Length: 72
Image (cartoon, rainbow, N blue to C red; front, side, top):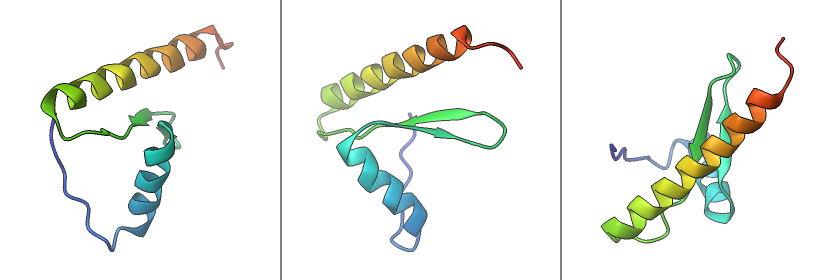
């Protein structure tokens, strides 16, 4: 995993990060690509890893649900 610094002038990104503090988000691009944005609540390496595992599980659930949808 890579750490990327976000600067205050990235207002749209900051707004998304503030939302992710409250609940995990699925960000979807126009092309249908999806990304999970989840807050790592503790700076502890183990807890960060656990948050990543949880986000991975949530992504799997989203993908499983999408797989059930009729194909366009």
